[in-house]
Image (cartoon, rainbow, N blue to C red):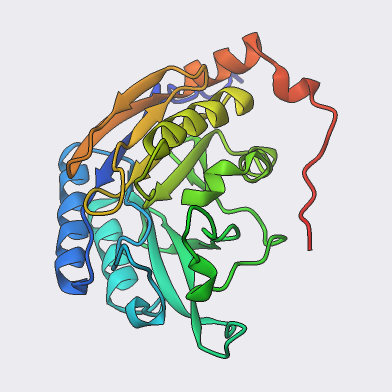
Length: 281
């Protein structure tokens, strides 16, 4: 009996980068997010990535006042639209329920949700590294996620997308842990704060995470006041294939699965490593 012919392997996975400007108006933000999903659907994307805090944002800080539960309007609409359009979604939001801070005040969680193309909530990542740097104190309003939580990796059209967010990009262990869990692509929704050298740090770190992990990086920043925008898509060889400016815009790119495999064959640095990543308490 002859072997059953195998379907041809898909050469690319199509990803839409939605660099949105987000404010405290939840309704306006939801309309912008849903419009980005429609744009992605028209481009026949497999995945659309929205920035950190896509549901609501204030550059002075985000906490429980802008949080909503996972079954609230924002995530529910993303799930509905993902199923309607047949595309996966990765998006940042804020949910209540974080443990109180040292002052006894309630805190929220900064999370990234992953929704599959059937509209199922495939996973939730609670931000581990809070942005207590460069004069900011994210931990006053937000509680950190557990460092030992299972990595969030989403399968989309034959590639595996590992999720981290914003300040996590400065910690190579976070990216390496996702690659250890099978990620081919690192997805980084962000609201990267503006300031001296910050745009340079954002770009340099995204390229570094790609090179050291021989993984593609899809880094999607917010546009608008107090943040840098400048979303970029980096290949596993460190070559920047897409780079946006500070303005809101939605763009679609193809990620080549064959290129990823080829880069990892030529540069087997992951196989040569001698140290493991172990979460600290």
